[in-house]
Amino acid sequence: MRVFGIDCGTEFTGYGVVEVDHSGREVKLRHLCAGAVRLNKKDKTPVRLLQVYGELTGLMRLWQPEVVAIEEVFFSANAKSALKLGQVRGVAMLAAAGCGLPVAEYAPLTIKSAVVGYGLAAKEQVGFMVARLLELEKAPKPADAADALAIAICHIHHAQTAERMRR
Amino acid sequence: MRVFGIDCGTEFTGYGVVEVDHSGREVKLRHLCAGAVRLNKKDKTPVRLLQVYGELTGLMRLWQPEVVAIEEVFFSANAKSALKLGQVRGVAMLAAAGCGLPVAEYAPLTIKSAVVGYGLAAKEQVGFMVARLLELEKAPKPADAADALAIAICHIHHAQTAERMRR
Image (cartoon, rainbow over all chains, first blue to last red; front, side, top):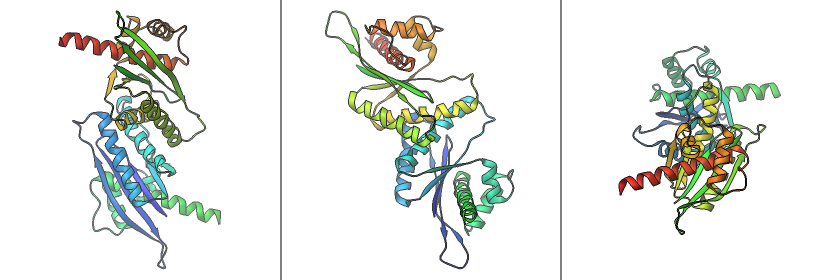
């Protein structure tokens, strides 16, 4: 299974592709790519949204994932920033739908629990554990890329659990 | 000038196309089309966003406007609904950007002032005045379609004022 994780943000939108490797004795997670769409604050909103859509669509076509995993958003912040984040999130989900890919959503607590084993883990712990699980030398940068990989790993864990329960 | 107005919503997203007709003695506004993208609550979010994007893109290609006008959103409502509205709004702006069209944003007060002459006008008053300005027999339905036409009319008024000031 190949999963495309997305961590939406109004400045940086992280992405990461993770694959499950069943070839060896142990089931292994393999890191394929990670990075972030960096938006220029000077650009107008439609231009920024077009950039997010274009880059994500291009990456999905390149990496051909089977599913897109994205963070559910719960807000303590104000409605204005929620609207702005929603705009980016809508475009990210549209990119997935446009590529014919299903979208799975996970709550932040679920993602951190899946990767660190602790729902209230700090950002650095997430980066550290992502690097360990994917056998990377260090945590991917920016942090949004590490978060996107964490979301992809979370989906893989959930899919494996669901598969085991099905059997 | 031909303007494509959009009134975003999580259930109904209204649209309306208005043209300025300079052919006669008086400058006249002409209504070309109005309606709403109706979303099914049972559909998943990516499917709904794909529908909004597809229908708006199709309409923009069909009517070939020069500009897209959209409502600015100020929120008293909670962050959760702001996020959901933002997702639709992001996709609407992306449709405009994808068609190479500039996007103009207007505050609700500005739109109502332009159409009714009173910033705190009720929804029915907006529908009534839109019908009058566009010489329609009655207010377009649903109300979201009338609101979208109001946004388009607002842009035309502002563009005319800017043009007069330039001269």
